[in-house]
Length: 190
Image (cartoon, rainbow, N blue to C red; front, side):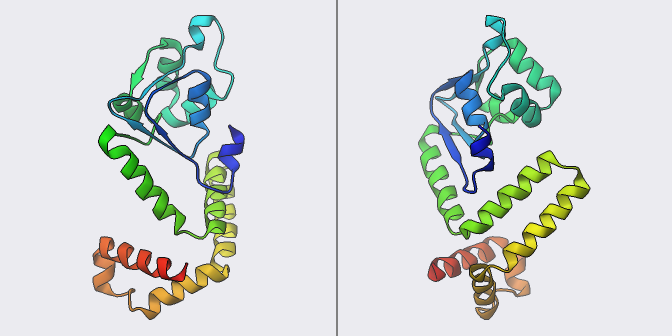
């Protein structure tokens, strides 16, 4: 699971079934998790067998849910539907079955527009936020920011954005419009 966490690419899992025990621990290593409201269920049954989760279940669930909810989840050995899993932080979102593929594909396509080295830098910064003190994390973030801003692809995107007149008050106010313009610029650069 640590490989998913530190992999310099984004990992997304779409859950349309039941994940429990080791399956749950595998998805917990992914960067983002989305579950079907109608079909996804989650559980950690190890307590029934007299053992504890061994693939990161105690560590990831506690970080995602907090201590009390992680204990309820692990010791309660109950199955959670996607809505409750979302509420507790097990997954990012519970999405209707008819919409989940479109949502995940749209997200993946947006992420694909981001320069791949920047995705790696971003993931390093997020892992640092989990693992380091705030002051150490801020130092790491600053270091990674300075590396990302020097990338030729990043410089091209920012220059083109400014040259297209996108950094105006009107565009800043309408963030949806700003993001759409930026996505068009990035698509043209790729």
